[in-house]
Image (cartoon, rainbow, N blue to C red; front, side, top):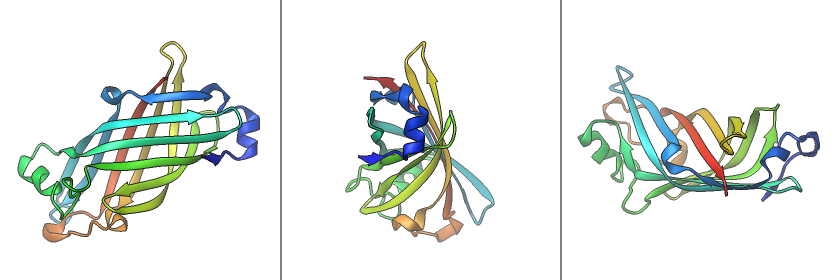
Amino acid sequence: MGDIDQSSAQSGHLSQFVGEWSLEKDATTIALNTKALWGLVKVKGTFRASGGSAKVCGDGSVAGELLVDAGSVDTKTPKRDAHLRTADFFEVERHPAFRYVVTDVKSIDDSNYKLIGTLTVRTSTRPLELDAKVAFDGGTNQLTVSVVTMLDRTAWGIGWTKMGAGIHNKLLVTAVFNRA
């Protein structure tokens, strides 16, 4: 677990989140948008979350994890989806999940945070900082973390570029957590 910067912990931005949280898989959405055929065709795909949890301690330490079922990729084109599951891309038979591990959080303001962690895709684990918008619903006791970022898939060893497959991919995640 990492430490939150002291100004954030002292300001109380995270104090309302102290506790353990479990991912609500069915309410969580994961989308990946890219382009193919040298930018002529937009490709939109989704994935299912397979697990996740978070813990915010009173001392300011945090830990979290989101697991994504790599084989659940769905672009509405079965032939493309089958190809994405191969060794050219996700190699799901050997690496069935993507894993994002949060090791630190820095508060920007009451609803914006920087998540500091690592993303593992196949055998490659790389640091990845994400700007996140966080919303807490006291009525349902749910925490929603929303992220939009661009990823260069070659950084994780996915270099297949035939037919003008896009290298840069837009990732959109809305993860919903319930207090455990």
